[in-house]
Length: 275
Image (cartoon, rainbow, N blue to C red; front, top):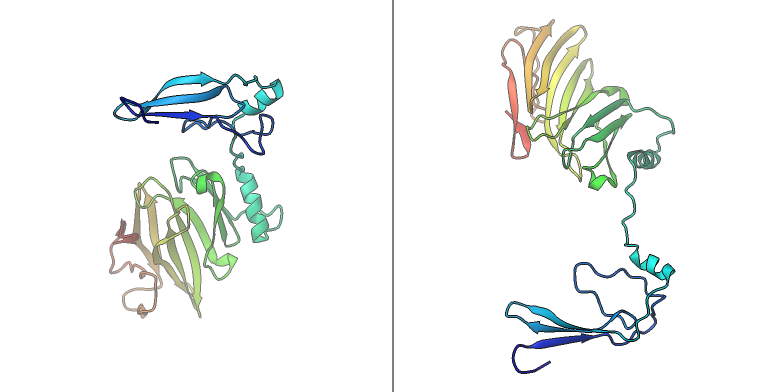
């Protein structure tokens, strides 16, 4: 609207089609000036340019305005609310249905730790070889994350634990998986990080090997935001009787040998735990 002096804008309620005071149930906008309604208390508003923006100068009442009935007033006052977030038990029940885990089945491993998000703790459960995590850090507590642990059988999943080994204050997952190669068995430690979208692997390292009554088992120490693997002890093997060589196709870092190796500390570098 052009006049002498600063520019002005006038906004007036006009007409509505298909809606009236009874059928219109939208709550007034909170982040912008709400729309003027033909049946509302305000008929028009005028704004004037102040040099930095348009500021309201006058307001005209609507002579046709009628206060809402008690029923309508209650409906208009009720602000829209988000649906309540599911409980952890509801999320776990949904996971069990999806994974076809029988009702009443008990998890083999249970963990309570801060895996992702803020400082709140999440819950991690393992059924067979199937891991599930629920809690505030997993998509705002509205969904679950699941991961099929790559072990040949349920019995080959020897241990699952949680510990912060990167120093970021959040726990990583530590899986110990048994693998068989003829008469030789070994255990591999796999370390996975937990994010809102998945479980990236940070490390895979052999920590135990057996053949008959001969054993080498490394010691795994996960504490104070660090991971350290120590050579441990050997039973039945020594430098002269150890005949194994490492395959270039082996994705796991090699077992530490007590007669030649020292303890190794791992630190997070480039998205991996490295020596």
